[in-house]
Length: 475
Ligand SMILES: Cc1ncc(COP(=O)(O)O)c(C=O)c1O
Image (cartoon, rainbow, N blue to C red):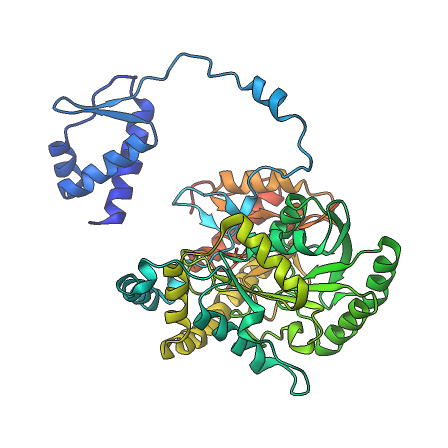
């Protein structure tokens, strides 16, 4: 079956349907087969997709017809607002990076690498092997498969200073991706209504998880070197906070990596306040010019709760992450996870383990580093050449994104909308600020499917910025 020709037929029929009256009969399948030079299976697949979109309906034995628009004014859900009352905390609309663009758009907004950056062959083989084994039918322990926990513990132990007690498998809990682990960690470490310090800007999902956990997010400014230890110390003191959420390596969105000296200073501040540091090592596998340095490798007293996800580097389908925590904090996080979802699918855990223990995993990571470097540099070059008004503070040493400052006074939300209308999807930086944005920013990812389109995308952003509206339909 050919996905491209099916998408081509869908696009052609969509515009046909747009101009046709309700109830009009579509050309027969036989005619579509001849017209598009496609197989009957491909044509059926395209028709099924249009039906799923609600554009057409098929009447067996009669044909396929343009669906009538229902005249009803739509149901009134007003009663639900009365029943639900005002939300306790505001979790805004679906975050920009989770929105699905049309297939022809240049996607610079999303956070998950496409198939060409994943170990696709390894993942498929691992899923097949795992499905044949015991993992397909047995319930794994609540904390996760022992062998997978041991793999995560060994990875962190290898990075840990020789004079410290390294993490062990019993310190590791497996979670279904790090997003849901974040809410559990925040709930376990911070009482409702109590402050949680967050770098600003920081990952939008951490801000949402803080709201979901009912804790009070308190921003701490962070630049390309990380938060200023003196400022952090003052904020701990003023707020009485007992936890800081941070990304010491290739922060999303800024790409910042803390130096070992900065990491040691921040850890000292955290210790001096008897507090926790949540070290979200989301981009551990995405070092480009440097390697990730977990701050958890400098701690054996339970101050650092370490979060390490495989969902972006192995496959977004294999949602598997590890939380490494010690002492009562570990027990509380495990209890919260179990209350929420009991355990993570053993099949996915087994598949993740098969991938990361295959010798080809290391080879994949080496190739990935080159691919990321090439794409990062291509996007940087495209912006510098074609969109000079978009300013980059620096080139990130790792991660998947660029953090771009826009001219003062830019209406970012409008820019994002106009770029999308012109075929380029970008993310508004506003979503990465726990409070008011410090300025107008865009977050641009370099892991989308079409790097050759970066120069055209940069020209579109520049045109929209200049008020020209962009080169619609060009990508
Ligand atoms: C900083 C950071 N943490 C956590 C996550 C969540 O990752 P996952 O739930 O896929 O493990 C993301 C995803 O974008 C992220 O950027």
